Length: 63
Image (cartoon, helix red, strand yellow):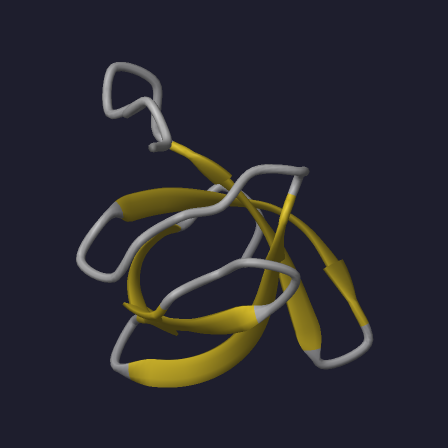
């Protein structure tokens, strides 16, 4: 699972939901808010929760 690409389907603030390989997983970011529709990479896993990082080049400033 680590290294897989995922799509955010529920905004990740402290925690959200991503879709990976057709499955929905709880996810948390490495410290940033990530909006619905953004692509992320899975960088870790804690039990049934994935740790994700926004793909480089996709960063957006928060308002």
